[in-house]
Length: 494
Ligand code: SAJ
Image (tube, rainbow, N blue to C red):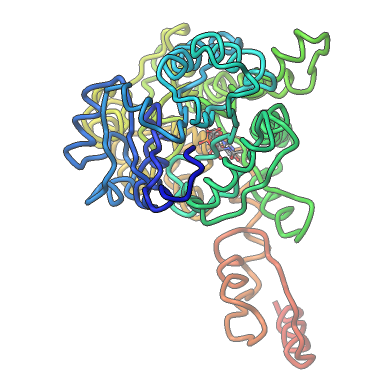
């Protein structure tokens, strides 16, 4: 970092190593904010796609930001030597529950070979506490030859939420930790110059590393909690989604998570193992984190078992089952199938010789059918594994006409109205935690009473819609005594 004023108006140079879900939107933002920005990736085809103004990942914001961007996309790692700010955004996968830091070590070695002494190195990849000090810094110092105390190193964990149109890279608050007050100041100033949100300085690198692992573990644990609730409520005949929706009306101290046929992606089911592994090396066993992982890991099998047992109830034995598996992506409307629970369900169906077809509009190459209709024609049961919006168009008539007898809704995507219509068409429906009986049966008592408060001035549109959409009836403030009297009078007449 050149300290004399004469260079102040020269834009600083940023080099971003790794142009995936994390690095590409960040690189585009840096370029937009006036930094001379190099985006480096070893994948030539990705660089060619970016240079042609196309996004290598399905993301409308990236597609838009690529137009007229001054980003210099390259496979040439030489751009690292030109940088004042070097940001590492490479994957940190976990293989059989053990963190694999090879991509990070390779990137660190390359940075060490090319970095200028005055440059700051920022790691955005998710890493367990200790990696920056115990692995990155020794690697940088030994290869660059610069003593550690002269190297500026910071960690600002990425929080990209793939497919999220609201919380984009520029809008999400960030935390940053560093190896020195100077590095912390530079990193914080840098992020404050590009991110339109708060940047919080942590006490040190380890704290910043732990923040990310903790927030993803928090999510994994809460999903495990509702997945366990779903399995228990299925036996208790309680609709878990209604209960969670009800609980989320509490204005504080409850964050809703929803059950499903598994937790995928290269973050939530993965990151807790960083902490488990690192703590284990320091003699502590994270039983709770492990248990949450086991519960979520078991959901694909729970879903397939549910489907098989429901099929038996309509006379379809396992050898006659023909499953239409909808969705390979690990979550809705993203073209990412890393750690997707769908593959677990496919393995389980292979194990049990269950016949299946696969259809995912985001993965036509990995699909066995070319469209929804063809999938329905070849199936007598449906397993919705991903809540892609493309599947919302499926009608009850289509399912009925294609002789679909059972629907396992692994993401509880279907509305109570659609579930009711499915059942009236004689198709068995089961969600994760919405046992076959619950949803429809509960409604009637409520629906026989005129609960349409749309003309009552005090209720917000959401309340009314809420009444309509979700079976949880919620009478807010009926402030007009006469209206209440009229209601009670009407009720007693029923
Ligand atoms: N899921 C559930 N129930 C829920 C929420 C999610 O079953 O209530 C499942 C999803 O279907 C999916 C998996 O969990 O299979 C993960 O999906 P996600 O949307 O929770 O997370 P990611 O992996 O897309 O992104 C997460 C985000 N982290 C948190 O929300 C704490 C994102 O902010 C991180 O940047 C990202 O991980 C990451 O890179 O670490």
